[in-house]
Image (cartoon, rainbow, N blue to C red; front, side):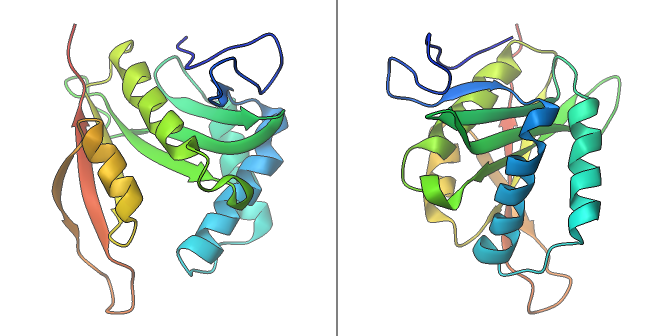
Amino acid sequence: MSQLSSSSLPGISRTGKPNIRRATIKDLRPMVRIWVDAVQIGMGLTPPSSSDVVDTFQKRLESQSSSYGHWVAEVDGAVAGWQGLLPCRPSPMMRWAESGTYVSMQHVGQGIPEALIRFATEHSKSTDLTHLVGFLSARNDAMIRLVESCGWQKVGNVPRAKPSDPEYLYYIYLVPQR
């Protein structure tokens, strides 16, 4: 399994980067809290019920594989953000993963998204994945610059279901094949 950084102390790396590790069921509550904050504060939307969100993420954590799953970024022993790679377009010919990156409000501006995106991009190279896809808010200029610097390409805009919906951009990372 890929690991971006490591150290002898949990959550603290010698390089000053967050420690990234495979998420476990113990990370469920912090991951849900970070996601709900992103939906409410970052996107201005109303999330589903708390029990629905917990159930969804619990199922995801219980069904991880070597290619797909969730990873957390720890800082000082606390979950500072997380990265998900979920199956999308299941096909024997194309193995795609939808990438999702979330950061706690307390750790914004500390390089957590960069560490997680770089981890996902590097991790994908050690798997049988062929593509990573992501949907980014058109207002998230920092994340757009970050994914483009990691080799992701914008392939389109996601049509809005109603005029009040936020604008999303569709990005793809073509995984170099071994």
